[in-house]
Length: 234
Ligand SMILES: *Cc1c(COP(=O)(O)O)cnc(C)c1O
Image 1: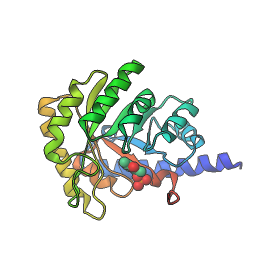
Image 2 (image 1 turned 120 degrees about the vertical axis):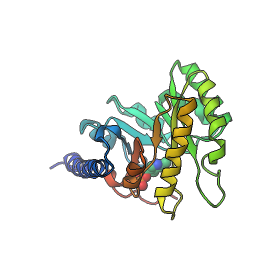
Image 3 (image 1 turned 120 degrees about the horizontal axis):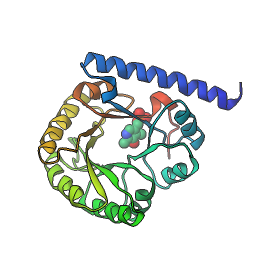
């Protein structure tokens, strides 16, 4: 077996196991499996892995850094939806708007405006999620505090080239994630009173996606369970 074939077999097995866990969590929550979109987070892994995943039926991939994300999007020919998940400087927003289909990590009005200009210049529509931060220590560090969701959501909805998709969170490290995912679901219900199309609830990673499914997440962002542990970054 070639290295590529061995890697394909490894990814196929991990993907199948993860999909089974997702299906089981959906059954336990009384939800349909096709209610939930799996975004496979390929950060730090090569474009060849993204190609293999596409060949295994993956439709959505996530990346958290520019230019790594853009380089991979350029190198991969398979048709995929590219999700940008990471902290983003306004001066890189224009470049990200050229290849990303969704940005999960919009955390300030200024960034929304930069993404809007980039999407307009590229003639594309970019779906944006408001990232919410529930961290007890230093809240608002990555994401807006819950009270800030409405203002940022309105700014995205009003910005040319942007579509308001919904909400995203990363559960604070060390906390029980379930109450935070429930809180995100309540914020989503509030949001949909003003923005009916903003139905995306992006929550759940390798360590906590079952809890996210139980709370109603529509998009899971899963990396390590499928690709393997990432080497520590410096
Ligand atoms: C890396 C990352 C993930 C995936 O995390 P895993 O633990 O590898 O599943 C999800 N969301 C964001 C924002 C990330 O940066």
